[in-house]
Image 1 (cartoon, rainbow, N blue to C red):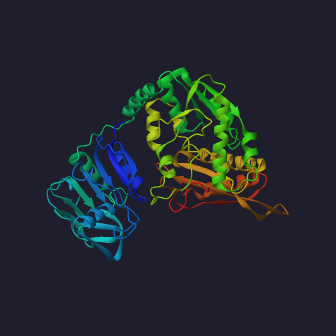
Image 2: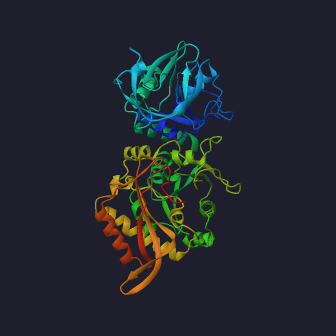
Image 3: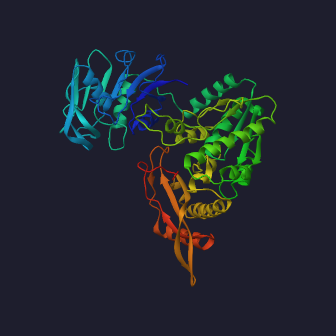
Length: 509
């Protein structure tokens, strides 16, 4: 994999968005913590310093070692990065009289500056800082201003170093992508060679070299990630790939058999293992979300260990881990707090003598889908909504029982089938139902009921890093609510979740 661009993470909520915008330019990039990045920078063509919730004036502010970067590689410093360069290189950073947050417009752009090629006058940018640069660092030249921020952008003469106090990666910066393109392509001359076809060719070659004639076992889920990983591996090692689909008892209604049927005709060697009772038995009485995730992860590995012993000389465990899984499971110092653990991220226990291979580890979800299309995978399968690895366990708040699983499976089936029949499924990125740990009073016929409450959730997103709730038609919500209450015994109230990510997460646990 060609590294090309290194992004240093200082804990900003927007760091992942920088990566997304860079990838959209067909340029491969990686995110590393500011205090733990590769010592060998020779593969990289440019570096981007991200923003941060910290002030450069604070004692505990992130303090990166840029000695191997500055003046040696083209560098773009964004927000905190721009203030950091000023503060520690002869300039001045002070608290703003008012927090500079939200939309602003460029009121001055230096003429004939490549960084602003194709950027319109009065271009809107997005500010998000409480400090402001009052004096530029040594050898710096002002490139742009807004009405309130004199030094909105600058460059340092004698270096290929650029700095901006706004966020080009967010949607509200109308020419932000153009500025990134100007820096990366026209100034840093980074090649735009990160395409689905190139990824497939490179990854298949890498897998052939890494795996050789070894046998690999892969856990299929029926979802996009594991399917694309399986087809990639199949192209590389053929019959040496052994796919196992585990029923953890927490799948959608009838999903175990449906998924097995789905893989027929794809040329994959798939074995179904029904371990639902084993998982539910281990989960009995557990209410804590993290404990549920870790229990499922442990049992999942135990099942795989049992199954891998039935395959002679298996050496590798393949997983469909993708980049958001990795990012959300790693704390940066941490300015970026770990939100939740992911069942398929991290090492294996010592007793399981398998090495891990993760062919999609560096891809976002939409990139995985494009790679899948390049591999010729059925569009219907590629359009399938994401489904959490721990399954319905994290959509059942509180402890898990077979009865609760049955209720949620039935509710979920009504909701998902309703989305499909109304032509809404493909307009939603992810949808599901949540069983709440409360009962509510209701009336059915002439009788009082005291039954379960379920919440419906539907979001639109690109890669799951951020998400907005979907404005489903009222008529649809009314119909699906009536269907759930009438068809699913034990439920008498339906609510709709209208929270976005952030501040909420997509899943409730």
